Amino acid sequence: MAEVIGLGISHWPRLATAEEGYSIRLRNSLRDPHIPAEAKDPANWPEPMRREWGDDQGLSHAAAHREGLLVGMRRVRARLDAFQPDAVVIWGDDQYENFREDIVPPFCVLAYQDDFVSKPFKTGNIWGMSTEDELRVRSAPEIGHALASSLLQQDFDVAYAYKPLHFTGLSHAFANAMMYLNFDQPDKKSFAWPVLPVPINCYGSHVLSHRGSVPVLHDTSVRLDPPSPSPRRCFELGRATARFFRSSPWRVALMASSSWSHAFLVSKHWQLYPDVPADRRLYNALVAGDYKAWTDTPLADMVDAGQQEVLNWFCLAGAMSELNAPLEWSSFVESYVFNSNKVAAIFAETGRGG
Image (cartoon, rainbow, N blue to C red; front, side, top):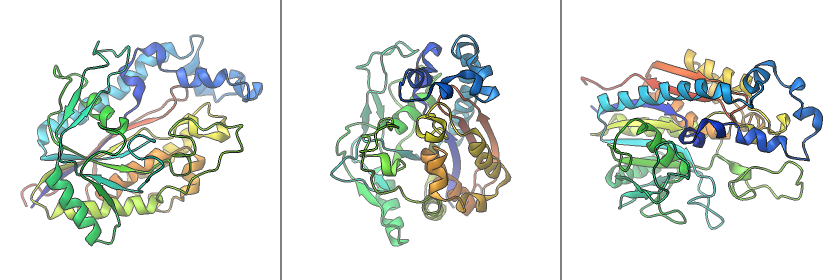
């Protein structure tokens, strides 16, 4: 019997940079002349946001936020080290990186024949890596081929690819995940296990119209794109994936890669802060194993809350529901001023000894 473990992390880009840059999204919004002055006045912000912002634009809060994220990264990495998977299957978003105007699949299994070679190290990263340094990650073409075949046989019309389209390496949802799981590793240029990325069109109506960038609130001329797959459909994809791996010969880690609601997607907050209450409700349901609360969530509610990237976690939740795998450990790292809340999770292994 196969062995499967479920994991979740964030791929927040700022974790690789100095803490002085953590609040850059909010600082950029505060300079936006189209956002009303009263919305930008800290006196009108939620009280926790005022505390985080303080008198130094969040710098005093940054260290605690960083450490909260690293607790999750280190625990997930330690669990991977103990589990020793044959492959890590990752659900992540593609933000106008590999998929552009010529095709935007709702789901795609990247069963690449060659290794993934990326350059995820930006200028000023905390490890002192060069922007030309490469991260090489082994692919899992055999597992990808088998997964795509199974999903199609289960009436999921997924796309699949054997080579890249517009982006030669891993898009950031996947490359950053590998980079952060390597956070404390001496070797920053490779990853320990093969990876099978499954990108999801999380951004839906914004993915082409805004070219993967921040929506412009005042621009009403933008023609929005068709929507992303629904939360329920992502949940069902996770279930179908779990059914396949449950009967496969492989030890597999199923992983969601994303932060939760993003401030720059929450127009009702003028793109200043995430929807913390909405994230808390969804997180509490995850902890309680209340998957009905997840499958009953309409896509419109997620878009309103800026939770588009949480669709990656819907796949993970569906898989864990199918496997009846209890949540073993999780954390919710709250933030009003650093763009998003971040969740890390570890679900119990299934199949051991079967």
